Length: 156
Image (tube, rainbow, N blue to C red; front, side):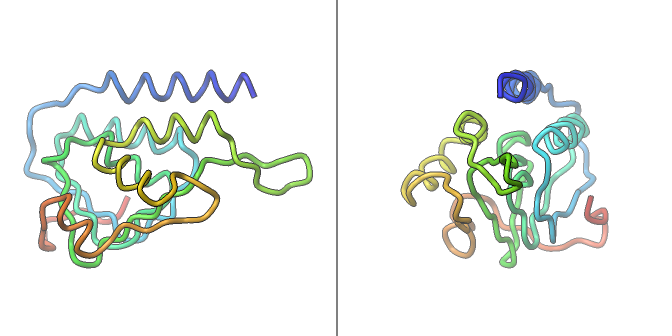
């Protein structure tokens, strides 16, 4: 557990020290990303932030994918009407092979989100084992709308 907490602390530090590079006109599109290992996404989004690319969320972005909201500047993220963000608590595999909520990792995840997203999550009971979704008008009120462009790169 200490090893995981130390790793997550390092990952949070890496996200916080990311430096934005010169702006770019390129776009990265997220359309069907169910998430995965937190560290993989922290690394991926550090590179994305450094590239200056705009992120187009045009479908499902769940679990660790949602870390894009804290890693990429707000003005570099836009959402389409199909955007759908899914949030839940961090978990580890327990001794019996079942998912066990990791409170420390969940807290670190929560702190990585921007304030408006943290408020929205808190208003729905916080990060739990149950997935909660932010989409539609609520999401469109938080992020600028975007429209798919032929120049958007394939999903990464």
